[in-house]
Amino acid sequence: AQISQSEPELIGPTKPIVVRVGDDVTLPCHLEPVMDAVMMTLEWSRSDLNNVIVYVWRSGQEYVKENDPSYTGRTSLFTDELKHGNISLKLSKVKLSDKGTYKCFIPKLNKQTLVELVVGINGDKGGVVLQCESKGWYPEPELLWLDAEGKILSAGPTETVRGPDDLYTVSSRVTVEKRHSNNITCRVQQRNINQIRETQIHVPGKHTFLQVKYDNLCTFK
Ligand SMILES: *[C@@H]1O[C@H](CO)[C@@H](O)[C@H](O)[C@H]1NC(C)=O
Ligand SMILES: *[C@@H]1O[C@H](CO)[C@@H](O)[C@H](O)[C@H]1NC(C)=O
Image (cartoon, rainbow, N blue to C red; front, side):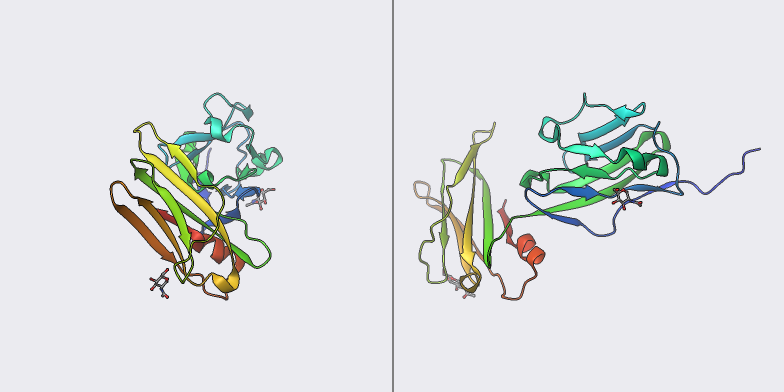
């Protein structure tokens, strides 16, 4: 006779997973108690993006048909680990747009767990890279970086994307030396309609690397 055991649970990390753009990352998720998951359907999706499919494992193999194209070729499971109930997802060459909430889900057990992924930007040699993005503009705005004295900083090219709603999203990165990074302003402006949005970014001197990256992500909505 079958003895009723404790119900299996999916276990994810207790804290957000932090990664830098361009690196690989593992999103942890496993079954407890240990169960063989090889023949189960396993689904990873973006719970913050209408459950866009990131990865599906079905009938003992990867099932690629439903995957969102932005994840194609960048996701995999540790197949040797599946028999131990470890269905952690490997995500390669992380992009900024990978930042978000991932759902690890087993339909048959109706169990799921969420994994939060934070994506930071790569800094170099004591420099700090700041990123600024602003959405929902029309006409196209300009984006400026200013130092503490209000002088314009030279930055990389402004990336402009026009959405299906005709509105513009602009984003830009600037690298500042740590000693200059205590008060930097990102300003987005459209002169014709006399609109200005700006924010000050403060980067205190003794940040650890990852905290700096996390704090630097500044988004106007
Ligand atoms: C799952 O597999 C990954 C990759 O081998 C490993 O890093 C992780 O520690 C494993 N998790 C568990 C709970 O064993
Ligand atoms: C930061 O610099 C801006 C000018 O670019 C200034 O208006 C603001 O007061 C400064 N803030 C601090 C805390 O120094």
